[in-house]
Image (tube, helix red, strand yellow):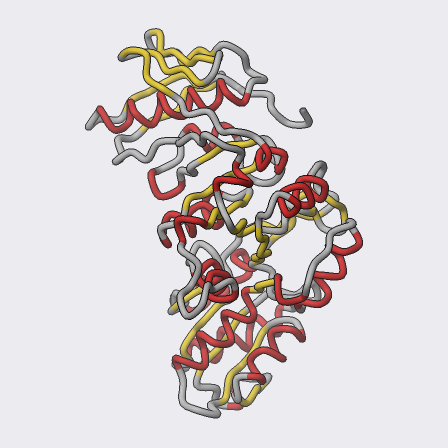
Length: 355
């Protein structure tokens, strides 16, 4: 156990459902990296859980901050996992970014693009002219990620931004889950440009903004109206992108523990990063989610599990029980809301992976 500072925040609490999640919501807004796959490898239980949810009538839209792969390539990978996927079910940050830049510059403006061919195609599809150097006098820069990204490309972006080009990015993920572990993401490369220029991006197309979720509601519109966001559930593995995007956009959200998010991060999450539901993996789509309940000033329960503060220690009924984590999060979050001061609590180390 280690001691952590818990800072007072306005609370958001976990919720419960009276039916399985796949029946409680119409549309699943699924992140990909860390949720459905890790690099080339499928996440355990993901594909079969998605198929089961679709058989139950749930619609699925895949949203990814990855701007390097076009829709058909992503869809092909998912089909390789045994999923039935139409290309239109994929929403990438490159698609959203290109539309965002087009709204912010003159018609036919020159744009310096750092990113994969998919991003370049999307920008060109908006009627914009692509240049590859700062000497091309771009009106804007759009920075994405691709695996062969070089120092020279970062230098060109920095040069253009320093000379007044409007600075847009596809996403600000600091890390990217791969089949062998974590790698630097787009946000890490963006930070290099910020360090060189002192200029922050004007906007990001990817999560934690909710633009991709809003796009999904339009794709699944009922008549002339977008699908009611109360019937949509944002699902991801990152609190600072997937879950924050849900909260920013007014969507319920579910975090899976198959990627970046950890129990410790959840326990210490600020209000904007708190999910509506916590599950181990996508099998949670088929489960009724129990609602945690407060027993007294020191104890919360969730199902048969409990969490309790005794002195400066947080204790739980079992360290490998997801319900115990749910109870613990509810207890810590309510304690933060009740106190105007920092509270030092010794947190337990949960062991929930691989179950």
